[in-house]
Amino acid sequence: MALAEKPVLMMATTTSTDNTGLLDELAPVFEHETGIELRWTAVGTGKALAMGRNCDVDVLLVHAPGAEKTFVKEGHGVDRTQIMYNDFVIIGPEADPAGVKGMSVVDAMKTIGSKHREFVSRGDNSGTNKKEISLWKAAKMPVPDKEKWYVQTGQGMIATINVAAERGGYTMTDRGTYIKYEANHNGNAPLKILVEGDKALFNQYSVLCVNPAKCSSVKYDLATTFRKWMASAPVQKRIGDFRLLGKQLFTPNAE
Image (tube, rainbow, N blue to C red; front, side, top):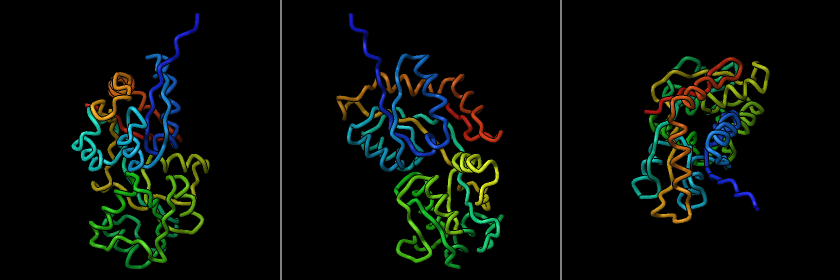
């Protein structure tokens, strides 16, 4: 008798949940507890939402609240559930050539832009890139594009940080990925956190199920199992306990 195939849940997620190792930690536990294999593609949130629109995945774990709410409003997603948060930080060389250390994020962006200090952007429509663009606007600066001092990598967060380090420039990252980058350098990373703690830098992650009314092929039942599992008290504790270099990467906040 052939063994029944294990159900597989397809997810599109942001690079930070993948880069940090959080999903490698959670996926085997999810499979053990539910019998469902979780497979994921890590891309910027913009691409993850596009995969949901195209019915290529069953569930999303992303961090761009404005874009997510539009996705739900347009009928592509349902059951958006907040799961965890961390924050964004501006990092740069310890010498801090722009002199932004300790500034508010708006003042820091203004200073980097007006001094034409090298800034490396993901430029990939990810949640991080969307946030960065909103910060240029909040600083009442034209959003940079073709300027010589503004480099767009079109790549994920760790790759973008590495480009910024090579060029002695600044970039914006979520704290979880920064801690992973620090861990890659045994706690002594070339780029340091210079701007942090601003309310504008809050970074919420949520799970959204792809709407079965739009995508008849999606496994809504499996997506719902995953969503509820991520919001459950034991898994929320696991997320809060996940650490690198003894530092917490994400703070659980499911309702």
